[in-house]
Length: 178
Length: 388
Image 1 (cartoon, each protein chain N blue to C red):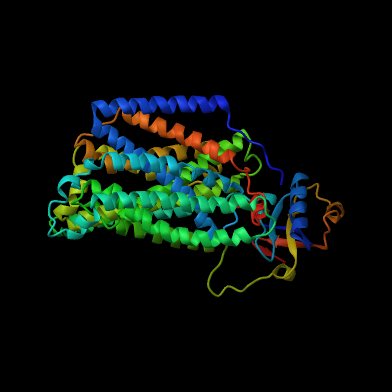
Image 2: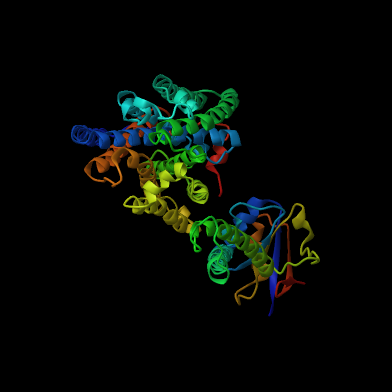
């Protein structure tokens, strides 16, 4: 589904933060923001939902720990029981270190690959810089235009109060802007 | 920055003193009826309070050495905690000096002077007491130096004390690492003179830092509620302290398990005696409870972000961890002193309540000695605008 978006670019992070807060108070939706560096408080200002990556990490970690505990139990006392130092075959303490490592491994890889999948990153992907200034000295807000009440001229005038430098309309199609 | 006046409320102060005296009276009666049990409680409370005060100094030194700016806004809280050192150290020295014969090695050494000649030398009573006095003295002096650097800064406009506190902090950390390991070995591991663990020093550290972070969290939240830290201590500060608590909870469990697994795997009788006494039989459930309180509960509660930023959740979790610290020490100290069956009743509850009252009392007085915020610290502005 494609729809129209408005790009508004600023020269200072304070203007970006103030504009983002004000735009959301007017009932408009902000799709994204592009900045040269991480801006503190921007996630709250553009109304970003809390990341779900933590849950992916937790589920992967638990899968690693419980899966490895089950595997060690199966390997060491069901499939091929081996007497190690006279200990019982099913000895939990000896299983803990490997289960711990498996939890860390799966949680780490799971989080990274989930992040890649969600943000559609893969090796060899070409960089698409949607607005050249954002790698240098420009802070850009992407505002949704699908609201029927959206009036480009009025929004542009409203943004002048926040020292907007440039605005332009683009088409968003999936994750792409053209 | 305007300093906010704060005084110790008189009625609260009187109530705390009364309760602490009642607790002391209960322990005095216990000393007549069951001297071993009273001594174990005394040693536990002395060690608990000393390490809490020492932990405050450790937090200041650690953040100074890291060049951390986030913690500056509430640094007066760990500074005030160091005020616990004289009381904790006093209780500890009373326990050690007045009742040295309660250590099994006191009368007849370790029982095998030929094999354990170094241990015999190390546990020579005069040397033992001199070390204890030395540790407590050096901790009090060094924490005073750290606190004084910070308090002197309040009246200065240049940053000479900031760099001086950096150097003191580095020296403190080196001294701390050695002294806490030796002190833990001296006062607690030596209760069972024939037993040893190479993990003991780091195990003591892990419990100390866990209790310290909990106490800082409780103090900061309460001080924000009653005023002095209102508008200073933010959700982002709380969030970071909670993250540290979560991390060090895992660290405590990691160290606890490492010690257990090393001993369980090698299965040498002289090493396993510690865990056999504590995991086979009636002490077992208490060991499990200390693991539950120190790691399992805090771990799962502290994983979600909203919990780490919620002050009522954090207040409860910090109390759970402090109780966990009590049971951790209880499991270390009581079995060799009071025997194979756990004793828990009025004297232990009195110890917990008494320690709580004394901590609150001394903390409030110590906190009132200086401004609530280190107002001339060069990092203060950055700390006040901190985002986690």
